[in-house]
Length: 143
Length: 360
Image 1 (spheres, one colour):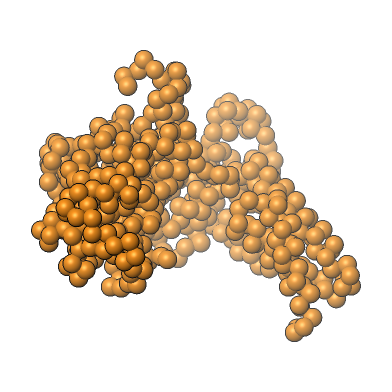
Image 2: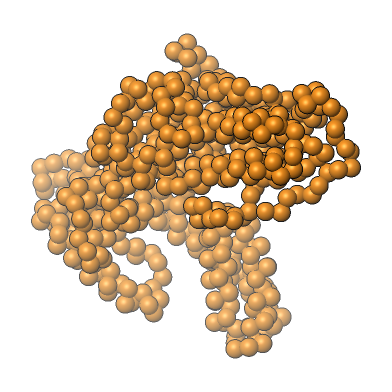
């Protein structure tokens, strides 16, 4: 998958957004550039409405770098999601990424959790219900 | 040719394995495999099917060996413009004539004194000592002069090949500095900056630089930055260089993050630019240096841009430059309004005893 064009309208994303009960689980699979991040942000906020999600887990374990733009984008997703009625939690920040963010002075100012499991537990607590229907997982979103 | 070629095509995996085991560069492997096959095609009539495989293996090995020899010789004789070692083929006659005309034209463009010296040394075979004696100079000075003249000659040969003229007065000195490999002079002339602005020189530069690196692995990474995707490419290259120097995973991530910020600045504010990442070494310490250079509007309020929270463009946290400065050990920014910005920043490896006690 290459991104030769600056911003083609329908390029495949390097991100998957899965629906799990009333939660969305968004996983970033590779390093993303700024336009890809921006598109991810738009898609995810759309999906919150479409799926009537009450919680969002964003797994950033595969991100190579979380710089000012990446941090800002995650923060915007969480805030916009909040405005649309969903709680967002970021999971999977790698140790090196965490240390470099601290040294860079970047504070996500967002709920974070170690991994997906902890993230879902956080959402369950924050949304006040264990709504996770175990069998309700959907497939990768074809986009 | 039809079915007669099939046995040759069947050789591809074998030949590839033979060459691949000896040569690392994948492009070179492709080239040598192609060349082997071409020779096999040419010799097809003379070889029986049963000896095809051993013949191919021997051919491939010979080609690899002669390539390595040639590379070796190229390294030793890199200062010579003409390459007397390459085997003359039918097409080389025409190329050779053309080449000779180019070199003759280029020689004509050199100052008379330099021309005479070059011809005396390279063509008539006069040694530097005897040339020095004739001219009341020293062998070292003559050798240095010869090296400068060769650098000029290489540039003039390249220019003679072109139909268009260098567009600016800076082009020639910049190209000569690149050709001579004189880093100080390159810096003084701001060669890298010129290459960004001048497509003419940017097109010629690789020919001058390739020769110098001699095909050996060059740890320095240079990434042109004009769009989003280049930011990711630049930081990934930077990570490789930093890891090669020996930085920890956290520090390579830091270096990658810094490159990401700097490269984004280029994409956001400037038309085009580049990120250069290279290992640096000083007595007692090693590190990685990042140079982010762009041709852009420049920064009007440099002090402001270096302050935390300085809001510049959509999306950032305004941490780009100040954050970078905090993370790195050395940081230098030069910006000229209307021309461009250059950020030079270095991170030293910390865990080496010699580095301790410095201002960490």
